[in-house]
Length: 131
Image (tube, rainbow, N blue to C red):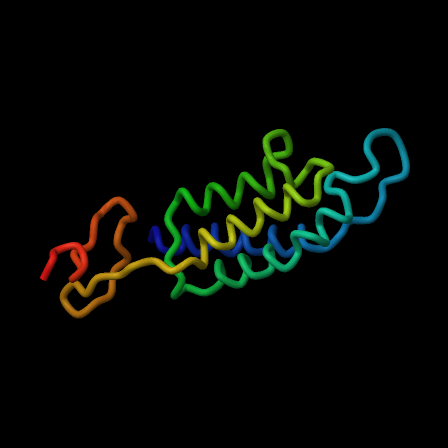
């Protein structure tokens, strides 16, 4: 029941990322010509497409905070560098989100299943235990 809702949210966000990776046509009329500047869309396009592919892959585990960060990056006009004029800052934020999504996450074996571990939990290793 809830799995379908999460899948729909991930697919919707993936579609949104792919739409934003393509530069939009200029609007001729009153108001701004672009919501997202074309050079920003082009600079962020590879990261946005990679995040969209990760969202469509059900084997990639994402928590709500990561989904919220991606969503606010592409949908929050006021607080996102994606809607600004600095292509470098927008690209850095997009790459940072990509690394947060696809970055290596430690896993533990629990009853034969691999589960992701929270970043706050300290893992015991040979170096830490002194053995």
